[in-house]
Image (cartoon, rainbow, N blue to C red; front, side, top):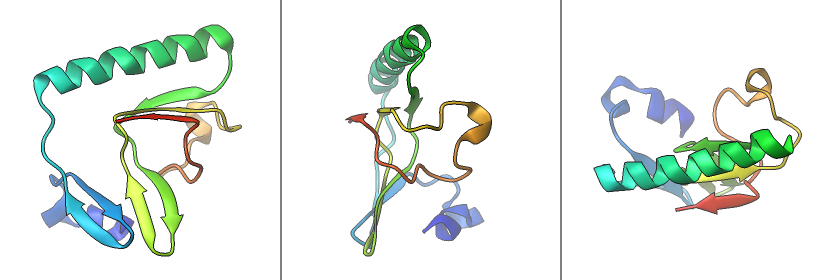
Length: 102
């Protein structure tokens, strides 16, 4: 699925992989973007103040490998050991988030 998403013809498509099937997602609205920004900002502030975990928005997360399931929650909070930018997985998160907001 990663390789399929990287093809030029798929570069501008918003999709998720659910149990091996690709689903096209609609483009988010401005109000959606504002809400995601606020939630992501709150999660990031909590992370910075507590020194625990990290927050992301609109990032892929692998939930299953067989059949493949890769989703992109609007915002997510992770408590795994990877807390610095340089240590983040270069593709999608391989550990489900502690909190996912959709």
